[in-house]
Amino acid sequence: MTISRRAMMAGTVGLGAAFAFRPLSAQAQTEAGEGYMRTRIGDFEVIALSDGSVQRPLDAGFVRNAPLEDVQAALASAGLPTDHVTNSFSPVVVIADGRHILFDAGFADNGPDGTGLLAENMEAAGIAPGDIDAVVMSHLHPDHVNGLRRSDGTLVYPDAEIWIPQPELDHWMSDERMNAAPEGARGAFRVVRRVLDGYPEGRLNAFAPGTRVAGAIDTAPAFGHTPGHTVLSVGEGAESFTFIGDAAHIPALFVANPDWQLMFDMDPDAARESRHALLARLAEQGGLVAGYHFPAGTIGRIETAGDSYAYSTNG
Ligand SMILES: [Zn+2]
Image: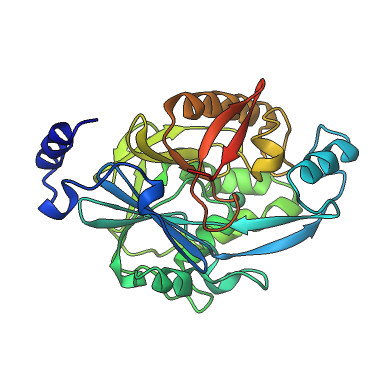
């Protein structure tokens, strides 16, 4: 892209002169600190954050449809330990048209030890929680939605508009579905109610996956992990950033093996189809990518690797 087109684009979206002539290489503009990574693509700034991580022992159930030794081999070939997996929780802030938009919310103080670090990592990256203008949710699993409300009931982003995929609300707020779920699966419904019941009028917005929300954020259905799971993006083509939520969990396992089914995928076959289609699209597009369970505070790209894919953070 030439400078003249960039200048024109900057003009059409009304950005200030400070944005108009920045170089395009994301790598050249990357700044990383403890718990965050900040980069720029097109007219947008992307800050990958961390709410922390937990380790879980690797057992045969983590990947439903692959032998444990294959899962261990995939971890080993990525240079990772084979006796456990590190589950990172990695929300992202996008700055677009001067607005700070958070993708997924972490746990706040409702999670296990090793989590709840989002606020301090945000501040390390120069963002105060009060700067957040909007929060857009990929889905409503507890590790994503708990961070909207602290355990004492107070809202973490009281002034922000909250955007939630309509089919997620339909599922998690349905008494019928909660009552039909086995007792062990009702906790996730209760978390959604804890967070959303009584949320101030006018702050909560439901959206149809596929529509644009919060000004600049494009959304696309990637159902399967949950009934309304949605990926979020800004920009276009190679100058885009896409947040894939949980469409692929730990990349060494599920980007490298898109057919593998994570134990938390609610509709494993739909999740696999969504994952394949999404990874193919992202590899072709060449824009920047982050995932909620990708290594904390990283932004990378999806590349083809043989007949599969890889998540690369090398530029
Ligand atoms: Zn998750």
